[in-house]
Length: 118
Image (tube, rainbow, N blue to C red; front, side, top):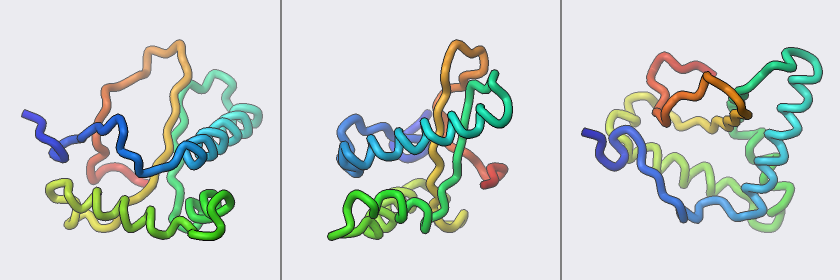
């Protein structure tokens, strides 16, 4: 019974982030993974990071200083607002996530509900 933007809508070529922006976010996730597993649990298989807007902008503005990336936040919010009920939940947030296998902990793609915190 899922409909586009009811639970999720995948677009392979969404063209929202540039390849260099994707590479930077992936490198940041790898850096954070290595930093966290070095200090904590080396058996970690999953990492989820909530990026506040200012941190997201600092990261991406570092490769696009001329134009800046504030427009991306507005675009994410427009997409988020298309999800039924999203406006009642407020502002969109950016979460980066990665899983490294092997693991028995993978779950299907899903949208976090009101239970989700930072």
